[in-house]
Every structure is written in structure tokens, then in C-alpha cells.
Image (cartoon, rainbow, N blue to C red; front, side, top):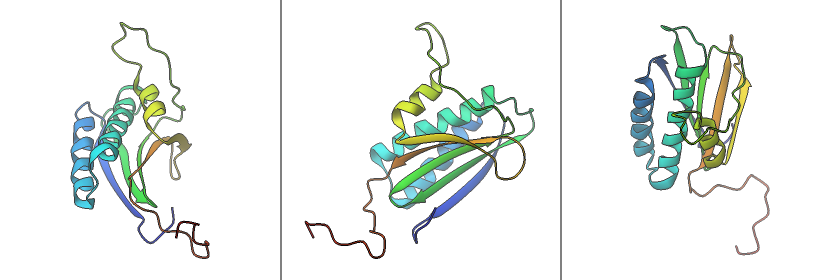
Amino acid sequence: MTGADAVDIRWQLPRTPRSAGRARALLRSQLAAWGIAGEPAETAELLLSELVTNAVRHAGTPRGREIAVRLARYEGRLRVEVADADDRRPLPRTADLDDTGGRGLRLVHLLAERWGCCPRRYGIGKAVWAEVGTGEPVSPAPGTPPSAGS
């Protein structure tokens, strides 16, 4: 990430079912401090909730270990990211109508402007991330010619 407005915030949460709610509360508080509301905030909250829930339910991270949650704001975008100790890449699946789960990554795929998975920089495991636009204007890169409407 680059840019003067880039901000990167990290939280460590226990691998428990309550962590999805805690992550949502932390995210709402930070987005309110940044003045980001409405659809971008709601979408980011849903994306983060799904990613944390997947890390808690499916990642195989031992109980008692933490998951790492990251919120980044840069160039008119929000990135939510959840890292766990499982090296396996998550794959969206098609859930049957009566299944009580299995829709999380499908929602992430449908709602995020971009999403992906990458190995953790330090240590074992992976990080799954998703991005949404904030609706904020983006400053042009230095040397970019003005648009025709300027």
C-alpha cells in the first residue's frame, strides 16, 4: 500500500465464536472515527464477519491461539484481512438450500470488489483479505494529466 492517506490497524482476537462480534465492533468504531458510513461500512462489516467466522470454524488453528485481524485504508479503499495458522487456501462452495453454513466465501466473492488469499509474511498460515471502495475521492498519482472534465 502506498499513499499519504494509508492507515493500517491490527487486532489480535482469540479463536472463539465471539470473535466475529468483537471484530465487527472494533471495525464499526474505527470506521466511525474515519467518518466512513453507509454501504461501504456495512459491506466491510459483513466481509470481516465472514472472514473471522471462517478462521474460527474452518482454519484448524488450535484453540487458545489467536487470529490476526487487519484493517487498512488507502487510496479510497478499505481492506479487511484475517490471518490464521492454517496453510490451506479457502475455496467458495455451493451450499444446498437447507445447509446452515457454507455461504461465507460465496458472499465474500459477491460483495467484495477484490478478494484473495496469500501466505502469511511471518510464520505459518495464510491471510484472507477482501476490499471495498469507500466512496472517497482518490488523489491522482503525481504526474497524471488532468482529466478532460477538469
